[in-house]
Image (tube, rainbow, N blue to C red; front, side, top):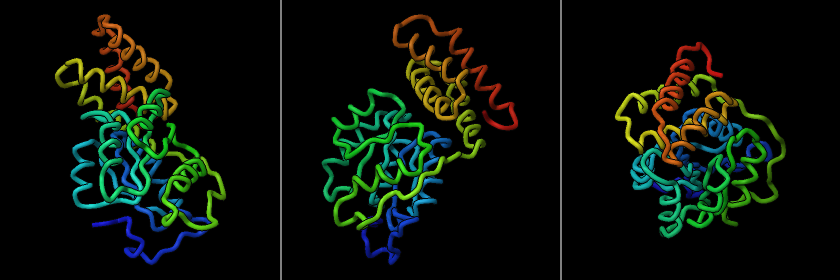
Length: 238
């Protein structure tokens, strides 16, 4: 099913809903980050679909072809760059392919893989979101004379942050192998930074640095797991 076909919906974009008629597939493992994008799509008029890993995204793309795809660069089962490279070569091609990350180096990786653009996390500005997508849409899918006309700071649901904490608590409770620790550190560093949880973000960064340098991480991993558990015990997320 081609979600990007303009004939699938009679809706026409407006000044207040410039992405009306667009379907955006978000490949993102963080529920907190995804909730921010969900709200931005809601305010912009776009429909949203979500996949939380590469496997899920590929399964989705066998059935639907969105008009826009946003791909997080760090996913539980691999790099978003691999999916971007696949989509860049696919025929027919998705209208706009954008990478996403809070890591500076990731933008170059996304561009090298063939992405049309890049969204820097944390995603909070509605006009930045709209403008980044509108500028990358093909000419025949781009609304004429429309652009992001207002800005608004988006605040995701704090409970989505707790969902992320529950997810990573399960990862940390499983086999304590290198891949799991690397994923947990990368995931937590990104989502904690998005949520302005500096304590957890700093602890996750230290865990990632220790893993990269090959130093012992048992104590750091326990510290991170303890902070995650503390977040789960709070009624509201930071």
